[in-house]
Length: 175
Image (cartoon, rainbow, N blue to C red; front, top):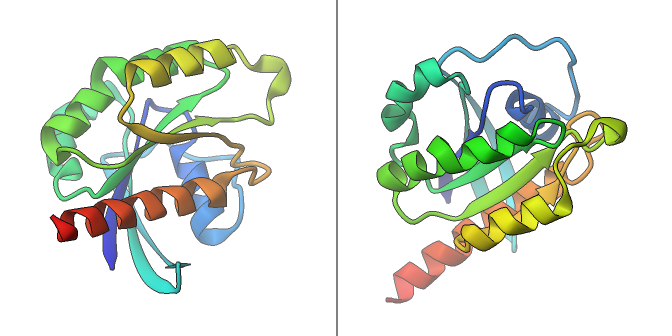
């Protein structure tokens, strides 16, 4: 199986850091903002099946919103990433990211990620806010609190999204 997945979310929420932790196994603290899109690949073994992931790191700046249609086309699953220390980054997922993804990619598995859990003393997004968000968006298949710095839940999140994509493909093939 080959799957294209997208990491969607505002600039600075840690999308590139999450990808580097997952793909390369390390954290690098001095990233430059993504311009346009960067594409990474990784193979996984899920339920004894080999899965090839093509991971699209989409620029979070609003100036790149007009290009998202090209980036989101063909997407099989997506992460909605927000920064636990910036409440606005969760709010902005409502405003543009989810609608853009659904308009372009259609009904795909979505997983919510609250990143930067290692900055415990700076966290401003409450569990209630996350639960309210999930209630409003019942199509989100799961959610994780992660840290690209420590690696907390990063592998789990990618495995879960891949499993959700497999389930969706299996259910569509049975229809």
